[in-house]
Length: 609
Ligand code: F6R
Image (cartoon, rainbow, N blue to C red; front, side):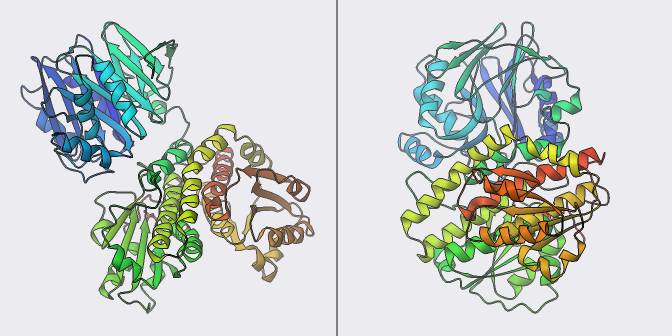
């Protein structure tokens, strides 16, 4: 996702910042920029596209002589990729410059009130409000102005600020998005990831949540939000450049599994406001048109299709709308019955999958309204649709989708809640209760991942098995399908995923002594039925690996192994229950020595039909 680099010291920083941005390229971006303090004024250079475009802009005399500056790579979330929306942003007078990662959830209210006070905005971004807030509160003390600004904003973010009258000073702040300080000699760096400054220094300080940092060439001061100084150790990192890109994780897939709480929080941000209801601003299909919808048709491929399968349950349950679903490669060869009151939802992480694009175009030509759910701003799917709902998972590098999958599930849940609101199929207080619970899931997931210990142990016991069966019912079924796909694609172990009730109609013949059977058995209205299926498995001496709800001690007596996930309501449970299955697949593939980031024969984006 977005990347930050900032420098203060004695050297000319244009090149240092630019090289820092190069090291952040792996995070994905669609525009980039620098701002530097040069001859007592802030110079700004920004460009759309890759860093070569920025380099073109930087050629010549611009920004030379400067030894204080900010750099940013932007992955568009609020506002399309454009020069105006690229960071850094300035205040009205061009005295203050900021770069920001994350999302300011209340930016619209802030923007409206700042505008009413006379601030002029030049971009569509949420980030620009921070430049104007700091301007509003600035009375000669940049640290105090940043502190006051933080108390106005809600969301999750990391940002850095410079002011033309404070040569050598960078003020940074962080809430839930990473910010690190690279400590040098007579110079210091701030960045969102270590690779940005790794070639210059290996001495690192980590900024914590709700902390600020005041950095000059000769000092680093970390403060809490009462502006009280905090002690912080300097750690020397020994990673090589590649390990640093992976943030210390051994693979991108593992890093992306651990990034899921953030991907989920970003996807929900600003869409479930505290005051209640669901707000889907960028959904350009009007509420009136959506109210007339009598059928939702979900089309997608692979992992995205599995997100669609979860979507069917929530759309039926919350929005009480008829739902059909197909893999995109089949949809086009059927004769689908569509009308202007059908909403076709194409789900595609990349927004470039050929089969999904063809299906969406076909649906549009048959008169249906088409919505794209995608992670990539400006992708083809966004151009082939009447409306777009973005997942905000950040760039996914591992070929096997993980964080984009949970973000897709969340996006469909948002859509289902929004339709429920428009169609009055759920009372407002029930929508708000679901919204509150949904907002709590990123934290539950973070807690789960921080303490997760069983998946690796289970993987060690089963990784040499030749076959895995996955069983689930209700919303547990798509989770099984996804878990089975993850295992087969990264470990090459054959898997089958089945509706648990269907097992006795065929797949039960596959079971033998010790065959591993993964069962999603979360608490919910189908739990007792799933237990009956577990008994059927045990009667064949197969081994049950259950995913169950925390607190369900009884299931231990029915299973060889249990992976517990935090308790949520049933419709939200797929967000969490898929995570242990991702980890199980991951560890098994690792133990088998497979390349999990680039499994054989697979491509991240499939642009052929
Ligand atoms: C599996 C995986 C694929 C994709 C599928 C669709 O881990 O990533 O199954 O889900 O190729 O891709 P998108 O979502 O880009 O349309």
